[in-house]
Length: 323
Image (cartoon, rainbow, N blue to C red; front, side, top):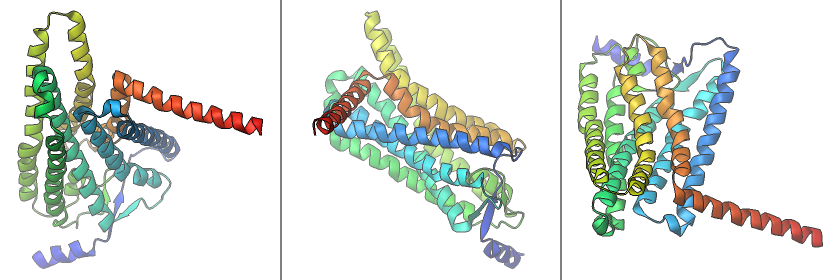
């Protein structure tokens, strides 16, 4: 039996990404929708990184973390969107075995990193609001780099374990992955191996990685809310809540979609796909919009950049007319 499973496992050279089960005429509409969202992700997150790297006004720990969040959003959406869009025009909808391994590894790496970054950003807001006099000391540049490096480290460890556990399974049941990208749950559905150990590893990783980040975020905001309620000035309370509401909005969308997806039973794969869209494409699109629209520093930096570019454009046009 073991030899047969090994043989079946070695024969798998590619998978079929089933995608969304809609009428073929809707594929063009889905392609255009994915293209629009992905274009907004590229524009928003690259724009956010440019603003943070070029404007000294936003040279603070909060924006350092926000820049890394934009980097993560940009790359994990790029792991998913291009392949999904190409499959709308492809009849085979295939992805190589190596491509599937790479997609799962990179997506897990960046999505777990994002969870840690959001927890770090919650802690940053806690220090800024609850201990403002010690903020520059406690959130030193060295500590900020360590926080970000730690986020990537834990993301990498989680991704390596998850990827190894998934692709040591035998896929003799089917090559058809009922999803629009290589994800753990749809891959487990087509495996004919014993899933006890992979499920235990997934549960263990959720317990030591996802749960602590949620706890850090909740505890940080409990202290933040208790501190804000002590502020007598209504204007002061609004200012603090405005600073935190952007982060809370991002956390709610991301964790809400992830929890919803993993609560959905396996017999509703189409609902899982819709939930996946929220954190693979919708969240990376909304993050720069949420932070830019509700943040005065980012809006001011954006005005400066646009103003300089407009001035440069007008100068070039003027020079050309004179010549």
